[in-house]
Length: 276
Image (cartoon, rainbow, N blue to C red; front, side, top):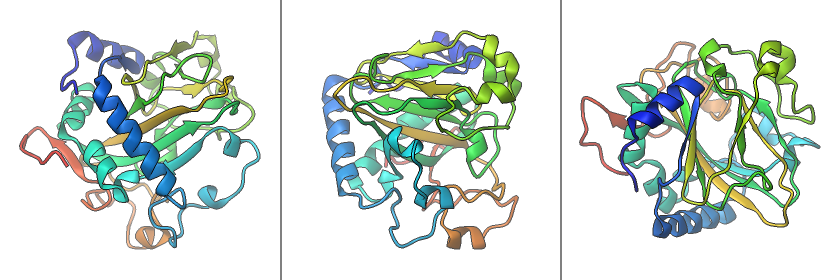
């Protein structure tokens, strides 16, 4: 695994709100990651690690359109030792911190995303407004575990939108351009498609507008995304991926520093954190 990013990649990320890291994993690592993720995905009986817990209502409701965008599981690292070793890797935390310009990074979630054959497009949206904290330097590293192409629904970004630092958002539904009704100036910007071969990744800021096309092929597009939040982020009151019981114990403004839920994976002041 590559352990650093180049100055050019950092500049591209900070200017555009996204950057492609084409050689992040080598061929053997791609096979190992895909096996670990697909195995853990198949073993999971629900979206979340605690099958008997009450998460945000969205995740238990049926959605005619959204449920046909992709199949997903959240926080496989909590139920799969193999995925845990991958997600909590300090080297990835260092890359995230370097791009974000942060002293420390925590895992907010991991999300296995399988765009099934002939699945719906993913509407343009922002990430951070869905989440349980507010930060302009949160980011996601999206790993292609099979080739992500224009034909099967690679990610697509509206460059520079993260610089506005806006938090209004829309649902991911059949109106794939609804976000541009909220931000009409963004409609004038040409989106950039980011096809990535298996083993590459795309990293994007949590406030960068992005979506994905339909999968127009008879094959799955397999990916796992790791969302990082800066160390020191505080709870904003949104339930999102926390259980009802967890939220009942939290107050707005509390630090999100529970190592069992949001482990610290990189700190500039202590670069001897365990790999997993």
